[in-house]
Length: 118
Image 1 (cartoon, helix red, strand yellow):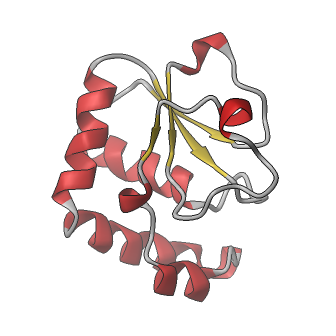
Image 2 (image 1 turned 120 degrees about the horizontal axis):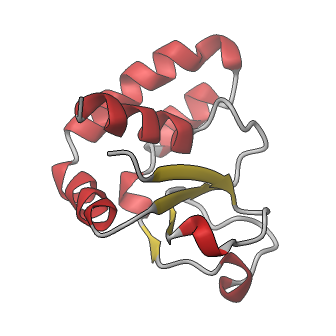
Image 3 (image 1 turned 120 degrees about the vertical axis):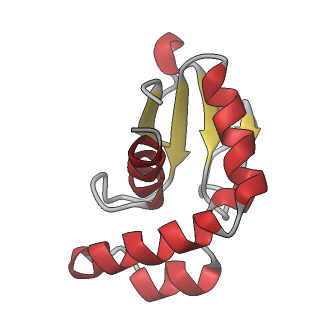
């Protein structure tokens, strides 16, 4: 599953983004639908509110967050299949709103998907 990128919602869309998929449960503050230029808002694939609050973007909790989020993804095959089908048609950019560009659900999701397709 090579064609998956990640990008902050506040970065401008680019022609090479391919399909832009918001993978957050909450809409990014201050952005319009037009500014985000989304192809899909797949909030069903986002971490649960409980996990999101527990993690709170604390890098010290990153490994545990990834483990718990992977378990949530395993239990959510419909949302995962929707994303897999989109990736099969071309490049996909997972859009997220977090400030931390290294420790966020889009990075965890991309890495999980790539690890599952080895």
